[in-house]
Length: 255
Ligand SMILES: Nc1ncnc2c1ncn2[C@@H]1O[C@H](COP(=O)(O)OP(=O)(O)O)[C@@H](O)[C@H]1O
Ligand SMILES: [Mg+2]
Image (tube, rainbow, N blue to C red; front, side, top):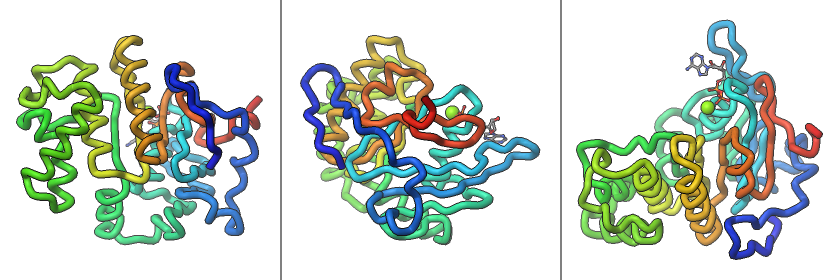
């Protein structure tokens, strides 16, 4: 992991050393990475969503996955997180092959080690924001009181403690996404998967959510797989990878 001096100014703790990682997927270097994928293929009907994609991320690193709509970004994220099984290729997480695990083991790992933020918060409408944020902790076995007190601290961290008793339908898009980020980080994931997390927000709200998300991730040392098609969102990452036609390449390689 590169230790960047991330300045206080809006998440621009970027390094200029975002090269030479794509392609370094062979077994000898795999252990350097927290999460690595090699040769992923995924076909839907006649559409090759992934066509030999490689990807790797180190502990605490924030990597932006960029590319036009339909290029395979979400499919890559889903395969990396073990939500979708690739047709071919491997995903290795902390030395364990995710692609070889059974469903039960994979979902247990997802619950314990991964956090998720999607474009539309996907909060449970019937639950309050606090209940939503504490849900992963409840699923992880925490009692209601402990889960809610931890989740409340995260809502405060994301500057939305005032909406704790409201339901998702009663809060703004920006507030809802902050609750979603709080929910994703409350259980202390090693990897945060964020798919267009600000895609439904105006630019001001989007910037703030990105600032809060990346600050919190850096503080908790969570790695972030940040899918976005917007370069101003990718600007919060340490390194950019571009997906084109189902293949991921490092930004440097694409230039
Ligand atoms: N569940 C699915 N069923 C059928 N086609 C899909 C599915 N998911 C993705 N695709 C197709 O795979 C391609 C890549 O999609 P996706 O990974 O969602 O791209 P992106 O996130 O970059 O917009 C697209 O052509 C899309 O239509
Ligand atoms: Mg997508």
